[in-house]
Length: 486
Image 1: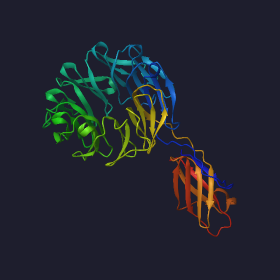
Image 2: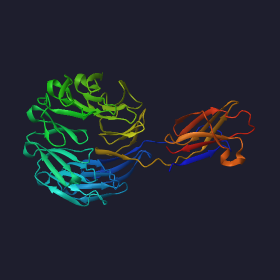
Image 3: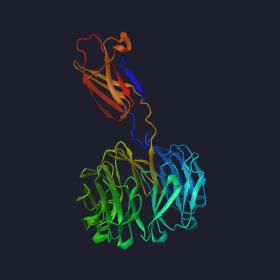
Image 4: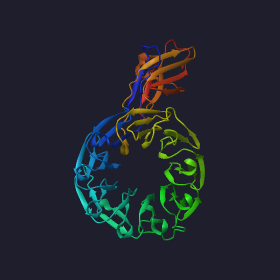
């Protein structure tokens, strides 16, 4: 049920507007760093602070968010010769140990998690998704060699590539109860992406760099025109309509469009250091061309150079408002914003050194970490430091933030001229603001009416609401501000 707060301006307060800090991002961040022998931590977007820490977990080799509702995150760590760590939102627990090192984690559709580790010649196992999360294991299967890639699919299955039999595609389904091996001799799986519901595209080292596709029944390169000879698959992202774009080493850095066949877009981009797919289907990438080039592919076919001489590209992330945040080595480390084809430098965005991790947290904001232990926040227009001393953040995921608390609504300032009213009230940007008035408070709630036309702006914890005087011939008017949960 939505909540509503009503504040009536019966006693009108004067003075300046109240500057109350307010944060409305929708994602919190869970991360593992090298601090104190391996510290697991959670950052709250609302509090703009780290609210949970647990040290002593060794190296964080893998970390995934969980979607089954019982727990938030599972991490694969090196403590106790290879352990799983589960965080339920308030505490950590360790369901299993002695797995050596970890290749990957991937959640199945029923909430179970497929794990891949180096023990016993490379093994798969499945952890039961029932709470307490991950304590029960089943489906142990050794001797798969190196497990290169492992991804969760939208149909609830998990796909991966292994070195077994010269390079095989593995599908795990039925809640982890079924494991199928498809094809072989594909070499190393350098890239693996889902094109659509359960359909997977791989970039492999077979035949000097080959595309291969799992269509739900078989894994092969049959029917892919120009499917081989592309060199190393440095980057690959899925876009739309069963298509993908890859950045490969062929001809000094080539962009390739896969649409059922492999088609060369253009060449000469150097090494592709970063590449992300945007929600509108475009691609943004960073390459070594011309001392560091930011490029863009529009509609899957039209590449363009946005900016050069940017140095090394550390990280890229799409923000919730469609802009792209880019971290590179320009100067002594720059954080840039790409809005369409326009590149800008936010306030306080230079001199941060190397950015190791970056993730959007909603409301056009992002959380970032540096390699010298700083936690940063991009608030949509500027970069600020949250805290320092965290060592290197090795893994990072975002989780759903708790619902925004009810705003503390108070009328801070009221101004009226002969024909206009301005009311400043505290609150937050996530809750809708509506001004109301009455010329007969004795009648109670039935006497209150909504102001039909008004404007509202929000800045630093204060809503400023303006409107014309709704009734010009009333002897007395009272106003109130209604804030409603979205």
